[in-house]
Amino acid sequence: MSLDHQEFLRYSRQMMVEEIGEEGQQLLKEARLMVVGLGGLGCPASLYLAAAGVGQLILADGDDIELSNLQRQVLYREQDVGQNKASTARRRLRRLNPHIEIEALGEHVDRRDLAGYLPECDLVLDCTDRMSARQEINRAAVATSTPLISASAIGWEGQLLELLSPGDETACLACIYGADESEPAQNCSTAGVIGPVLGMLGSWQALRAILFLTQDAEQEQGRMQRFDGRNGLSQGFDVERNPNCPVCSHED
Ligand SMILES: [Zn+2]
Image 1 (cartoon, rainbow, N blue to C red):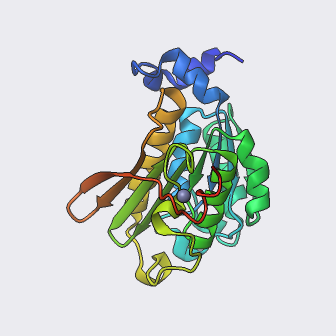
Image 2 (cartoon, rainbow, N blue to C red):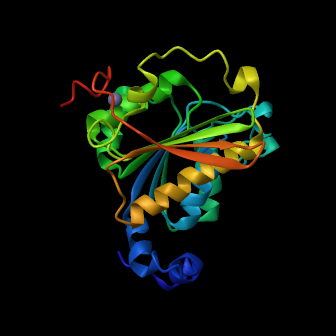
């Protein structure tokens, strides 16, 4: 379906950007994207994606909102404490943009759920904070050849992984970290995190998603970006496939 008058007005500022235009906006409208985890990363990522007019969003999070989430999970308000994150996020985002379709999955999604959803998606954003969930998303992305943008943050630092052809042209998450599902000694619950660092990384995921959905992205290389909020600097690296990767080396 082509863009109507309201949509032309709504998206006019981003359609003015040369590389987007009407064609890019139409591509966003036709895109289907899954966001797993509606916490400190998923809130800003899904806000920008909904605002930008990504036509179909699937939001997955089985957790309920807690008071200690409000410091960084910017979609939620104090009265939302105790409510499910995915359905609350859906409600908020619908009020932001009624032109898009949003599906909320209010339970923990396992590998089987992901295997059902990902083949229908152009891209999956890993916005989770648990290693076991990250590994499940990665396995499903490799198995279904779904482009994956993963992010994480702790303290003042964040990291973005852009794996647009995981386990095929580019590395998968397990090429870099192995397939161990045990939690690292330090995570957000034990070491804390600065809210705007998650805001940076979640926005970064949305930015890369918009770029990927509207441009001919380079898929040959996996990329990692590290951001240090103390000095405001980021560094990028190419990441290589591991020929002995426990997840993707069997897929060839
Ligand atoms: Zn791999």
